[in-house]
Length: 117
Image 1: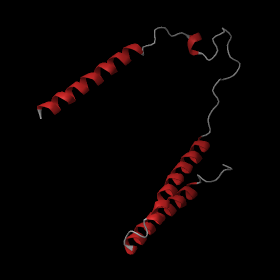
Image 2: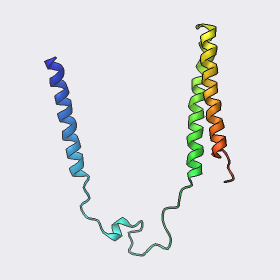
Image 3: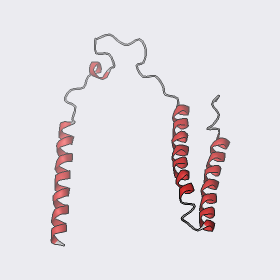
């Protein structure tokens, strides 16, 4: 018990020291308008260096990742079909696919799948 307390206190001490050193080293020494601007040559930029990012692309990427992970979860269900109880396997599979279809309907109903908006 004492050994566990000693090891955890040493780990916490090392992490606090690391966080303290990183916060000291990450302080910016000098900030001015030229250093914060995207061009450091002295000329004012003609347009913004950062273009606005469409949230629709981000939403499509998140939907793709969600459905990609769900497909990766569906594939092992086929492999475990022979090793499990058929009724419980069917119940879990139908429940999982029902959750997928409800999520797809919700995304469709919210208009997240419409590319033209």
